Length: 529
Image (cartoon, rainbow, N blue to C red; front, top):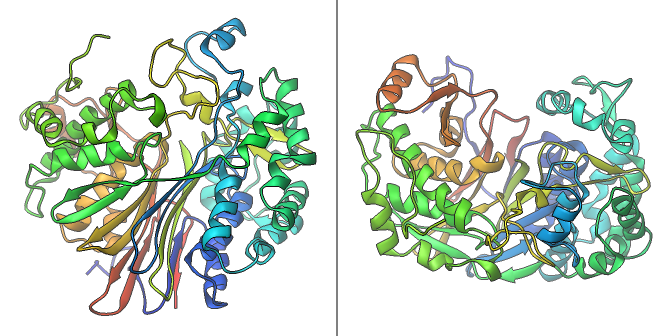
């Protein structure tokens, strides 16, 4: 039990249904749908549509999504809702356009054809029960008449003023007298409301063909993009069901979407950590060190090998194989921080996550993203759509698995998770925070499984992230622990801001109770009934 004298949250407990999101209006929208008899998919769609309005720095309908759905008594279903590059996109074409090492955030080449709406409408057609106009009702209302900016949303917004000011459409839509809105101000996006209404009426075709697609393609072409109406029309059916991947951790089965997402990286970290004691008696410094070293090894493989599944040099099964895990684990030292290496030794950020469990036991783990804060920062005034920048993850290196190419999906950081045991769903869970997500999932599950923390305590726990040669730590990690980590050779720096965010719902079948948690690093909450 948590210390009731200290600020914090208890896990939300409910007997019938629960939803956890990173925004209170999103949680409320999904809960209302559940109370009206909607199922988990209905609630998730209502919640994410609302977040695409009220949390514009983090998500939008001009982004991508991934979903894991576990119907009651059934197997886990994975849906890849990530978009593809234009047919004309090649390394040569982008280098001819003046790009060299990377694809900048605001470049039109950073915009792949958005996949979110294709995924939403496919999920709704196959598993939804209430009509889309009902599910989008709150989102449309907030876009039309305005929504209040919450504190965390305001915190993220003000950091993006410079990039928003560089695009005329974004400056007009998201800046007010050149500044970000303060917490408590109301903001509207009537053009987005009209687009949502069109999608509710006509489905994916309203986004990928006709006036909306024509406007988006014209906007991108004016910026020098390679997109065509045919590229957008093909995006209507880009979302596809894929076979989920999974690995075992302390007797639990952890399910992820397969590449092009980095779910395999979360499983690699867990596989490596599975060979070490991470129980409640292990010191914080040792736990952080082991997590950092496993993270470095797994992310090193991600950056060299992860790509569109059709272009990966090794299948996910190879990266999760026992011999691969054993090889990686041997490279991890308890005594010192190490450089990461590939097991084969070859030569050579912003998101919302939500989860729902309905009264029938259906569970959904749902993540929707525009990548960087405000995505590409390219806003289309006619449609109200803010376009993502997922194409920034592509490499401009000929022959690299993740090199940009025609109709190719980029490596994705966003990963919903699903935990199961003995063939039954135990918890939908997920972690936001760009590159942190795979490392964050491993830390969250270790907190619950290894240390016996409840979902809210595991979410609240101090965070660290080893990335790009630096071990970032939140200020809740004490100075003594930092000193021990530095003595092990880590370059430790204080985190510039809260590391990630998370939601999870634990299903206690024996008691008939749902335990839900939502990250205090965001504005959201978990609710149920």
